[in-house]
Length: 323
Ligand SMILES: Nc1ncnc2c1ncn2[C@@H]1O[C@H](COP(=O)(O)OP(=O)(O)OP(=O)(O)O)[C@@H](O)[C@H]1O
Image 1 (cartoon, protein in one colour):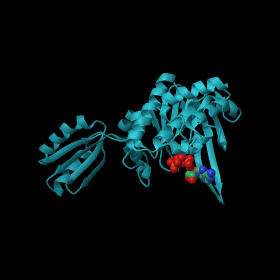
Image 2 (cartoon, rainbow, N blue to C red):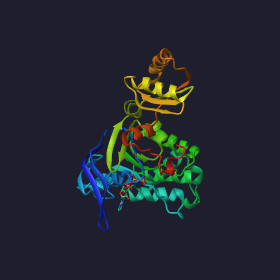
Image 3 (tube, rainbow, N blue to C red):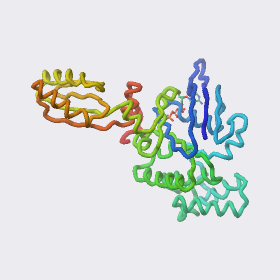
C-alpha cells in the first residue's frame, strides 16, 4: 500500500540546508495500522506530505495505493484520505453542507453525495450537529468532522497527522473508537503520526520510530519493547555499600544492561524481569545483601526511544505530557 525507496526531502533555509527526511525506505501492506512516532522536528509531517503528494521529494521514489506520487499525483489523491493538523472545514459552513460539497468535489453525483454525507454523520456521531456551522463545534467534534471529510470518497488508505493532539483523554478515546470501528468495517489501511506514546502503543499494530529524518526502529510495539528496552528491575537495599555490591551482582546477569546504583536503589534492564528476579534475589542473599523492596516495571515506547537515542521522546515535548 505504501512503498518508498530513498525518499528524501531537504529545505533551504538561508544558507543552511535542513535534511527533514533522509533515505526513507518503508513498506506498509494493505490493512495495516501503522503509527509514525518521533520527537518534534523528526520529519513525520514532511514524510506524510510527500506521501500525500502535497510536497515533492528532493530524491527517491514513493508508490502509494498503487500510484507513483510523482508520476500520478491525481490518481494517488483519489485513492487516499489525508487529515492534516489544521481544520478541514470552513468555520461558517454547516457541517452537512461541508460533507456534501466535499463529495461533489470528489465527483459524486448530488444524491450520492447527500447519501454519503448522512452515512458519515451517523458513523461519526455528528447527526445532531448536521446544521451547525463548523466553527461552533468543540475540539473533539471538529476532529470527527475532519475525519468524515477525509472519508467522503471511501479511500483505501487514510493518513492522519496527529489526529488526537489537543484533545482531552475522553475525546481521544472517543475519536479512537470511531477510527477503529471505521477501519474494521472498511478494511482501510491507516498510517498516522502521533506524539502520544500510549496511543501508538495501544492502537497501532506496528510502530515506526523516526528521528532526525531516519527510521530507527520498525516493529510491533511489543517486540520493540522486549528487544530494545526490556523490563526494568529495581531493588532497594539497606545502605550504599550494599547497593554497590548489588549492582556488581546485577551486572553478571546475562541480559542485564543500564545497571545503576543511586544511594540505596539499584536498577537494571533485563529481557524478562519476572524470570530474572528470583535468581537475582537468591544471589544477593548468598552474598549477604538484603533486598528491602523489589519491583519489575514493564517498558514503554519512551524506554525504546531512550535506549536507541539516549534521549527521551518526552523532552521538550508538551504534547506528550501525561501520555
Ligand atoms: N517548509 C520548511 N522550510 C524549512 N524547514 C522545514 C520546512 N518544513 C519542515 N522543516 C524542517 O524539517 C524538519 C522536519 O519537520 P517536520 O515538520 O516534518 O517534523 P515533525 O516530525 O512532523 O515535527 P512535529 O512533531 O513538531 O510536527 C524540522 O527541522 C523542520 O524545521
